[in-house]
Length: 401
Image (cartoon, rainbow, N blue to C red):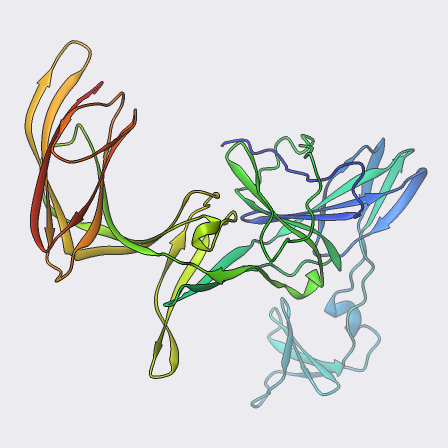
């Protein structure tokens, strides 16, 4: 399993004492404390201590939690085997406990009977972290949780971007969305950033930091984290969104008959196009006004998109635009292979469409082509506008395999 380092966006000069790192499946909460000698720190039961940085010694003293049977002790209890149509509030599933008005109904699975007594909430004391140190420490807590992002786009190009955060048992902190999975290996590896994430500028997310293919999006300092916030980090109007039909295949594959092409909506992520900020991966919903009703007509998923990249939303495949590939010739030499391909686009729509065909391979060298091509070492990219009907183009390519 790939090792992903823990990303702690904290500098010694950081003005905030709490940082919240939200991964794909985990939440890491980092709290700074001044310690001289021994200090006891209590924390919410939803959290678990993962590590304490800069501590000479630390351990956790588990709190005490009353069971429902402890609550029942020394109380006047009524015992019944059946209840006739009881409706109450479920306050526990294991064991099953219902509350109705001022009474508790506790189901004993072993004896198959109900215990009824005056309602009282089980008492508990929190877990306590005991730390020994003579310098400031950083406590790393972990909990289950994840973030998601939703982009809403309307037919006139107006859009909003919102980050949906889990409920986190701290009041406030400096929040980071991390596009990647967290693994507990190497938790002591701390990556120090050049600057502390500032609050959002002009409702735009700050420039992300990329470490080992993991992208970090600072949201800034947020309050009310325990409520499960919905944070707006982008809005505006996209000036140009294109529809594009695309297909890719390896250069060393055999001929194939007509297959459906993938349909996508594409926008350039630039300021000139109304965007120009780092885009975390998330769900995109397209809206349209129908009889004065705002209707979501399609939805898809967008990947992490840097500034200058393509905001690409895949919306499925289409029978209206199909592609066929014919391998006309293949000649193998000592260290490379030369192939001639013919690609045919069938457009059954009444209007022209933009098409992108990507040919994948290793050490590709384009020898000839009947249309323009963007050539790279591992791919050939053909872009064209296909009129209604059929259109074919040929190309000859050399590759290592």
